[in-house]
Image 1: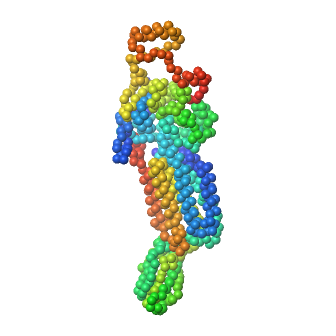
Image 2: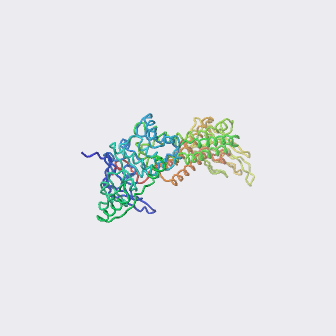
Image 3: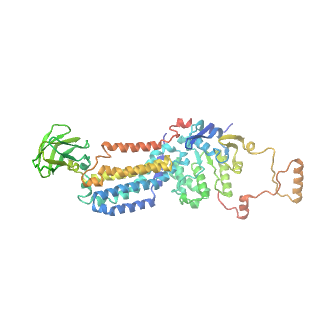
Length: 284
Length: 349
């Protein structure tokens, strides 16, 4: 049985008027996508490819100039549907004067939680994203990473069925990114849906079930992760515990079977380096 | 679109919270205290006090508009807020309410602190600006040179007048003929009746109107006395009405100042919500000018006030609705951003 569709774009297009003569700029054209419960759909594309515009059209923030968007089967913008969505925009919201705790409480209350529920949820979310100590600080004093974590917490403030995230790990250190991805994976495994816009392959690879690649406002590729992002003719193998003789024999065999593109020890990455040398500190 | 139950107070509180800043409040508190201490207010002189009031209203409005609602403006037009359950349109009334309350709380010290020094002075501020003086619109100075010459004076119609006061000043001509001139008066195009005669000395005529009635035009005609010029200064032709209690004057001034300061700030905030910063500043500037101009038009320019003359322009009645309505229209036009969906159906297309 197919899982329900939470969010859908059908032939979506958006034209902006820009410049002195109001020259039309086609930001999106004919984009189709679906986000289902229990799945992560990733929008992958370079800066300016139309990812953010697409998200805004899908949530009703911007009206499309062609095609249509459906949020829980209805045109976007209905308060009862927006209550079921958590949204993390690309730019941090201008919450400047509010304290971190107040941001989460306000978001929860806007989504229909009672005062008490919102307060309790805010407390648990602040702990979950590692901001328990900063909950009483005003948002304008937060670092970029802290602001991002608070934004994610706000998106989760009312237990949404669907998360729409625009560059969720932007500004986070590798450990923080890993923790966020872990949290999002748990969200997906709870049977909820995520639409994720990103230009980071690693983030998309780690999380997505389906990928839509946008290029200059059009769909360049679309399908399951392994079909879109993987090259079926080039394979990677990571092996642990090889001695020198083992490495020599592996290289010989690989060279006999195909052309070796890259050979060498696996790079550790900042996340693993921190884990090994700094005791695994850090926050999502 | 309906706003989900319980969201309105949250939105209003959010707007209030982002408008009312403790630091800004302290600034206004200082401004209010300063206004109360200003020489103009202390001396009870109408001109300085009025200028102070107007300047404070504008400064408060603009400062609040720039520093206060700017953040809610940005917040309410942010993509984050647009994706929250109330939706940006449904959030407008509670957002405006919160913003208004926040501004009111900010501006209260500016408006209340100077109050005692303005109202406690007898015979000064409030007696200088009774509504009767706002009834009169200055016309051209009238010289009644020879028999048959006529002076016309126009009053803003609407408010009933209980008496007319007419000052006639003789000016001796070159032929030194001092025979008195006879004056007749016609009200609203009605029949002329004799007013009296004027010789070589100035004379003030007082004509009671019972029952009181609104005035439009009066004509004063000279019937004789060929050698004496008569000068009828505009500020000497007064329509008298009932006196106005100080409380009413204060309420009127306060309401005008508060309302215009709030409107300035609100316009700025809403323009900031729906438009860009330069457009918002333009809107705020326009409102600022209006805020500055309105109390002056309502209460009289300091120069004119010294002569007892004030243009007849009243915010709460008559032609005052024109600038008020025009300003509202201006804000609405600003809010009407092209390309923004005007209905769910339109958004869904």
